[in-house]
Image 1: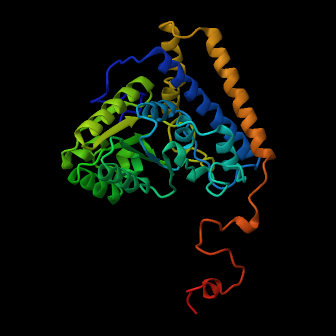
Image 2: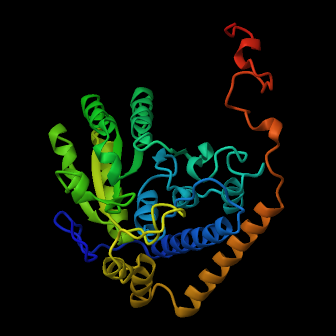
Image 3: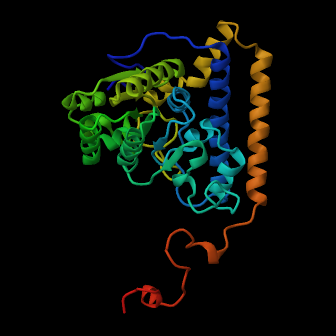
Length: 351
């Protein structure tokens, strides 16, 4: 795998999109960036507990993929999924409140950063188990095919998940049953701190689909237009041919694996080269160069997004924490019981 900010074969060439769509994608990319920067600050202040995995640097891959789908196309994701929720239109207030563990959160404060879900917008969640979202997308694809609908299920997973057996099983099942599933591997080149070439005998991860006769390609994940085109094409194929597709997007995260990762394993010069390809900066140049936006337009977008995130943080801070009595809601079939014998007291429980 190249470590110079470039990508290898199968990369899509230059593409363009509708000017209004391009402006909208930049707006959401910037919203995701400032949301996560604020989330990092709130984590350091102790307002966000547990783990916090940021996708700063991966905005092009996230936004481009979501915008390449219809709003009704179901999505599942990894635990690095703030951007997917925001790209789908989830309320930033509700997303931030979920990170804070508040009652007003997207999942009532029960999911936190790693388990966002917005069923109303066909975002079926982030999952803490590596590769856990892959078979769920196959199930969604099966439901689409069973009901005779024309939606497409997209599953986003990282490079580390490609070595999980569940991917092989899911690729086989999707092809065997002709399911409309797009397998989207966001390859940020490190599974936690382990480089892809130290963990995978085949580093061109999109080739995992070859064994099943599934069409696949590699795309520049730092180019939102290239990702958007690749996912749009893949979704069209899956929708019209009832056939799965796999995409590998090469990207780079600018922070460590999580906020608790000091990020000392990746070479500093490598990080600097990829930062020089910041997807927001490069896309901004495209928008300015093509006359789609002016400098004043960009300043207004940034100001509005910062105000939105400030409002979201204040809303989250002012919202009530989840009551201790409600912590087990939606986990157990029966109300929480403090008796140490636990299920023995529940109807039908053991004794």
